[in-house]
Amino acid sequence: MSKFGVLFRTTAVRLSALYLVLFSLCAVFLVFYVTGMSERLLQQQTREAISVEATQIEDIYERAGVSGLLRSLERRARQPGANLYVIAGPSGEILAGNVAGLEPGLLDDEGWTSEPFHYRRFTDENRADNHVALAQVLVLDNGLRILVGRDLQEPEKFRVLVRQALVVALGIMGLGALVIWFGIGRNALRRIDRMSEASTKIMAGDLSQRLPMSGSGDEFDRLSESLNAMLGRIEKLNEGLKQVSDNIAHDLKTPLTRLRNKAEAALASKEGGNQNGALEEIIGESDQLIRTFNALLMISRVEAGSAVAEMSDVDLSGIVGDCVELYEPLAEESALRLEADVQPGVVISGNRELIGQALGNLIDNAIKYAEGAENPRIRLEMKKSGVNVVLAVADHGPGIPENMRREVVKRFVRLDESRTKPGTGLGLSLVEAVMEMHHGSLDLWATEPDGNGLTVRMVFPAGAT
Image 1 (cartoon, rainbow, N blue to C red):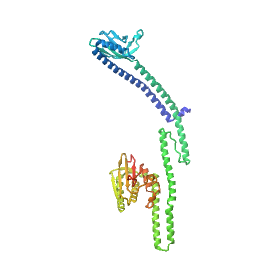
Image 2: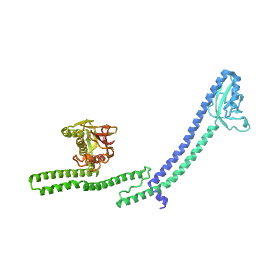
Image 3: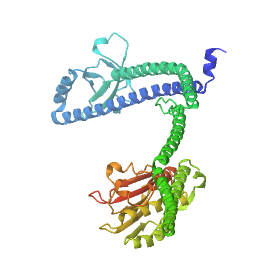
Image 4: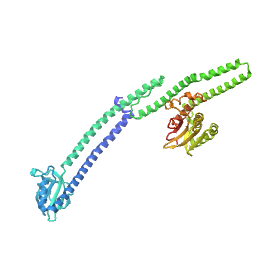
């Protein structure tokens, strides 16, 4: 099969050929439509100009009589680009004007001529009538007939010029479309080859590779964008796995060392009371390690998307109400007021367990860090904001510096002033993972203008409700 046959078998070239045919038909229609509209517009403007001048001539006749009318018409006829002026007697014979001859019977009826007519100029009396004009006939009270008209040569030239320009422009466009028709197939094949090369490198283990995009937004770009997003998620999961391994090696080394030291001290101690106390401390450290591993497993499960199959319509208002009821006694024990302003009946598509756990982490953090604050209040607010649903937890504790707000959502990251508080440094990481699974976002803001306090917002995107 010839190269042309192979090229024509591609969908892109077939579509290009179809579009070229449609374009040609539209181009022909456009030429006739634009020229016709241009001609009608010019004729309308000509009629308006003639009407205005006819009204002026009638006013001159009423004010200055026949002598004044003759002087005015003579002056107008000598001006560059003058209109056509004819003064005829009651029987139609031409008495004065800048026209040598008219079609017979043209001056018989008052008003607009029924259609454009032919006339002769003084400079071409011996040649055939080759000038066309449009005119209005006025009949004065003394029987004189006045013709005011305008030559249609300029509109006709304009119409021809517009048609020629359109034909040339559309011809160039058609030639360009034909060139594109032949070039688009080879371009599509080249893009497929580049995608294949990138796929080969990705399969070889280089996850930093991305499928090429031309920026045109066509189907190839949309496919590349989707696959690149998938590759980005895979790369992020791999980086997360490496980060978790590094964090476990670094951040869990200290509690494991403490466990070993306490066990060694208990073995070395000869007193039973000291041994029992050491064992209780070992159990507490072990529980903390178990909670840390459980949090890591939950974050990994959420980031891996294994909970997506459990997505369903859930009552977000009910989830917030349950969390408030659950944590209200804990807040009271810490001398804090837990307030809630919840819009009722808000339903979203999500995972009830994960949303509840994420919200619980935020409330627990707020209680932990707002204890002893001057304003002993924690406020939950949930409402629709435009097309989104915003769930916010605000406290008046020490807050988080602005330059650290993106750092604290990373695993095991804890500020120096938080080291004295119990925790694993994984709470906000879990909340962010849950919001990513729900295609939402997690925002951190200062509650007070001076930077104190922390407001954490869970924003569920459009289409979630």
